[in-house]
Length: 288
Image (cartoon, rainbow, N blue to C red; front, side, top):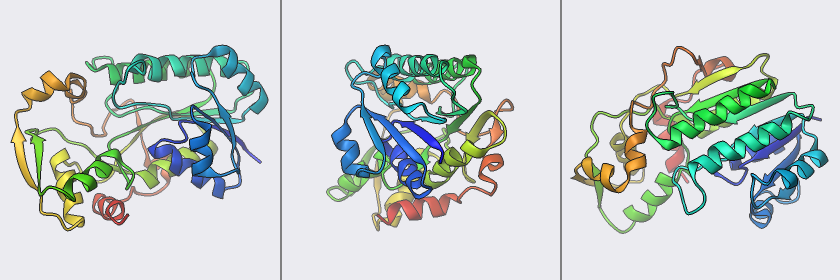
């Protein structure tokens, strides 16, 4: 039985990965900040270890010694900074401490959640810290698979959760006037499949995860609303206001969030099929 350690298990993608891994009868171990939440989500099947601060080297090592994992899926990440949870801390420091610790154990492979858009010239702290974490993993010499998804479509996607609430009360949305910035959305089910298939993938590398269509954020919101039976009225506000009031999110749009980096591999190599079409992604996400 494969022994699998998963971090970030209670997040959007993590929940799907844990539930799918449980179906495969892996020996699953979770390191979480809130064990009560994890038990409510997954029951007693996975072994759950609580760690309040992931950069606590001493406590992390104690837990790793107990688990002694064969495979590690590292998912911890944030989209916005909140108080002490900065991009530097959550993306970089947490990854650095974890990977330095794992060097002392017999880990067969680490599968790491990164993000499309990372690069040496990226202006956002989000992308810079994601890239720094990738480099820490590569430095260990442990076999790895790094996955860089575009916008992930699923019914628990935070954007869709918020949209359901808003559209139940209002027929319109205040929306940034962003016309020429594109995503290449990928279905959460495909992302999960890539993570779990990466365990048995005979090789290592960096993979970009994208679907079949390039669309704007407005397209995504419109299409999701349409499946909910809502005709959304968009009230635009200048993109410049994002630069003022959401500067980090503005910087994250430094280039289109689409696949095509010549230094990365396509997801089809691991997935062994074509990705779920965009229209099916939206339809499935809107059903719940």
